[in-house]
Image 1: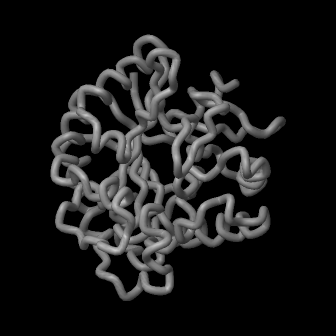
Image 2: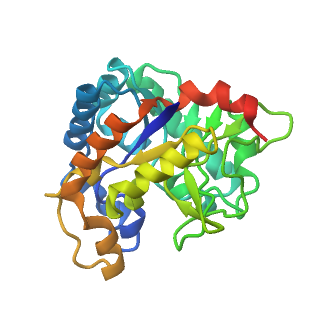
Length: 281
């Protein structure tokens, strides 16, 4: 069973946890670490012989086009994470369309790849944005991986399907949700990010094993380059809960990723689209 490994390429200050603490106007003046951290991720993948998808902010690609070329040259997929991490529910449909076009143009120009995949910042396609998938379909995207079918204080669409589904009638667009597991009648987030970093590795191994074995479906897992950077700056003004989520167990992340890549088979998200589209509800 081949699973999809993905990286949400954003810098340490562009995360949802700090969106009320660090102003976008200040981003340019902060110490940028996304290039060195993403290069470290590329080295990890090269060491393991893994290909993955890099959902990248247009803001990052605009400033680091050579990084986009390195990602593409290494055989990975470049996909869109929007332009500057604005959540989809903050847009009107036309503003969302503009954001998609702006980020795609930058990503394609920098990488030399056609961009066919999209992941919403903070999994912000949910019940508040019934129009978002239709806009993605109209803009020619083959897939989205923007829905987290869980309950969470920052995101989530718990009523949505756990596996691939077609959100727009008559369209080939497929939504590939990040992975969840089932335990005692509950749906648990198990697709990576903070859950992978903070919980014991055996939970992730069990969850992916459940999805591959009992469900006979591929897992879709994600993380961020800043999660392997324990030396990043500290934002003391952020709420305690945000700081605990963001900074805990950063030093353990690279080792856990190595174990994950050894224990399961991995590929790019776009490599699973046709297979999963045939099974989509």
